[in-house]
Amino acid sequence: MIDLLLLFVPFFALVLMGWGAARRGVLPLDGIGGLNSFVLYFGLSAMVFRLSASGALMQEGLLGLLLVYGVAGSLITLLALIWSVRVGLIRRDGGLVALVTAFPNTGFLGLPLLTGLLGPKAAGPVAATLIVDVLLLSSVCLAWAHSHAAQEAPGDDPHEAWHAAQASLKGALRNPLLWSMAVGMLFAGMGWHLPHPVDETVRLLGLSATPTALFTLGAILARAQMQPAPEGVVIPGIWVPALLKLAVHPLIVCGLGWALQRAGVPLTSSGLLTLTMAAALPSASNVSMLAEREGVNTPLVPRVILWTTALALLTIAVWAHGLGVQATSATT
Image 1: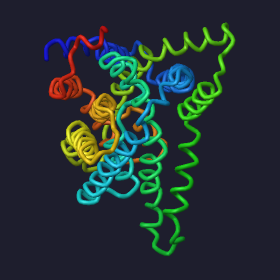
Image 2 (image 1 turned 30 degrees about the vertical axis):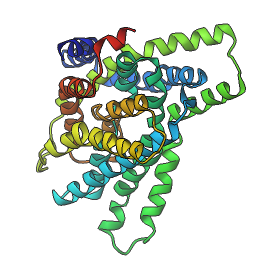
Image 3 (image 1 turned 120 degrees about the vertical axis):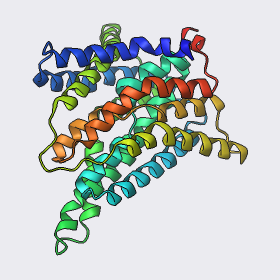
């Protein structure tokens, strides 16, 4: 356990550096958006392209793993939506709370952390989870969030939720990570290769993704912590979303995958381990920016991101230890 915790220290140290830089004013809060754009459109996109072009997303049994991950994510989303209704959140706020509960921080934290822990073969399943998170879960949660207008004005278009789902899906399809993944898979399938100068440029951008993403994650968490809560807004406790994200989500992935294996579905044990660890990641930091854009009026979203990230250093180590992951696997 101690060895696992020490293995995670460099990753979370970079997050802490970004948090400290934003808190001390070394990194202006206005500059966080620029860092986030660089990571999303350049660093992570280059990393995902190189992973896809290497054939990492064409592993055997990947579709079965994504089925497990998609069902588990849908269940977590449903549980989070039910909870949001029970605590009295309007649909706009509840949809984003459900998304932050079900969407792990695969890009900023998952890819560097899990490939370091489980080895290069983990990159394919981890990157492929973005397909489920971006296309399925984001679309469902945003459709629920956008349908708040129909809820508040019953005389409006009864097909508001369907129109919202279509708009959400179109927005998800603009995600640069999905396009870089698709282009990379095309290169792998066709056997194409970039010219050396271009490939070297993409490689350098990909190398920049990990430290910049982790540093930016820390800055985003600091900004969320520094923003005051709106007056008159009651903030429900975050323990339910945090528990769903860090404990229930990976438990469902692991249990469902094990049950399908017992039923004869060809799921690799290494792939299931990777997906379970991916589900155990803290909430995705980009949901906070999405919540701001959607006009969400609850600080619950950034608080879930903040606390799940703070607790993840311990909970990920617990999951890794419980699943038999050895710290030495990261160095082999």
